[in-house]
Structures are given as structure tokens and as C-alpha cells.
Length: 284
Image 1: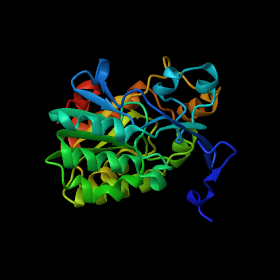
Image 2: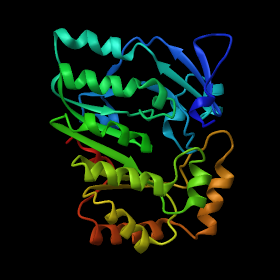
Image 3: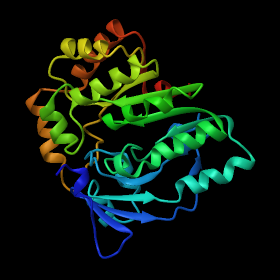
């Protein structure tokens, strides 16, 4: 029995559990949010889910949780906006033409449960059939390659894959429930080879074992666009008391601001295009 077949219904039919994640099915008030702040250059953000199964312990989204309990249990809960497609369908009378949409700004649209629910996939179909948008998809899941057939039907689309390090030890300390680095690189390579515009986002860049080798691995994907941002150790916030273990990786690998700048210098020299910070996320 694989992870996805372990989806078990509880007494409440609107609650399920997948692996370590408790899942609630909720009715959302809206699905398109006017983009502001860091995403202010877009027209809308679109999040089919809230919460997250991946549980990255540095995730800024955790600090927008509704309650302290939600924040402290980040990675162990997910809310499915089960009426997301119906909300988007209401826009058919006034189609979204030439609007820029970022999916997703807070919660990865390719949560593990997406494999069974296909909520994100249904939204992509709706956008293709009834709207004409410029879409950026942000994920760290290999599940995104499932929808290559739909990506090909958009006139303007970009798929961003987050890859923050070349080290599995670092990945496990900071991103305990995420797919491995190699799995993510393989997935974005497949999407790129399918003719889809792609980008690898090293945001934030965590300690790297070998910058030269890592750069070669990035180039081997065929991706032409990359974005990098630093992780601020002094300002970094961690959920559920996980910071000590994660930050130990910085000490173990002697990673600091100077090492970050050295890595970025190599990226600038070797990678086809490198965006830094907010400007890297400008709409396509």
C-alpha cells in the first residue's frame, strides 16, 4: 500500500488523513486574491489549498496561520478549498483576459493529496477552456509533471520548481517532508524538455555542499531561468522549535553570508539568467 492509498476517512466525511497530514475540506469565500506586497506585480494569486503537507520549517506562510496551534503544527494540516473550481467557474461571464496569476503564493498547489483530488488540475482545465491568462505555477513537487499535457495548452505559462540546496542532509533538516532534490530536478527537466517555460527558484538558498557541482546539476535540467534569495540566519523564524536542528547545518557546513555571495557569483557566471530577490519573480 503506497502513501496515497493510505488516505483514511474519519468519522466526519469532510476530514481525512494522508500520512502525517490531517486534511479538512472547507468552503472558501473566494479563490482569486488581489495580489499585493511581494506579489504586487501580478493581478491575482490563486491558492487551491491552505496549510501544507511539506512542512518546510522556515516557511513564511506558517506565520499567517489563523491560530498558534496551526502555526505550531505547520506541516501536519491542510485545508482543501473544495469549492475552488465552482468559484472560478463564476468568472465565466466575465473571463479573465490577459490577467497574470501566481499559483500559489502561500500553499503549494501540488500537495500530495492533489494526486487523488486533482483540484489543481481541474482549475488548470477551467483556465484553459474559459479564460486567457498568463500563469506562473510555483511548486516543489514532482507531481507537477503530471499536468504537462495541460501546460502545453496555455499560451503563456511558466512552471517554477523550488530547489534550495544540493544536500539531502540540509533538505531533511529544513524541508523534512519534501521530495528529494534529485526528484525535483528530474521533474523540472521533464517539464522543460516538454517545451514548457521553466524556472528553478533557489529561494531561499540553504547551505550548499559543492556549488560547482550543484551548478552543473542545475544546468543539466535544461532550464534557462533561475532565481536566488538568501536565508537570513539572524532574522529567520522557525516553527515548532525546529530551528536548532536546522541551523546546526549552517555551522556544520560553515555556511554564512560570504559563502552565499560566493555561490551567487558562480551562479551569475554560469547560469543563463539569474534573478535576485523580488525582481526575479516579475510576471512573465
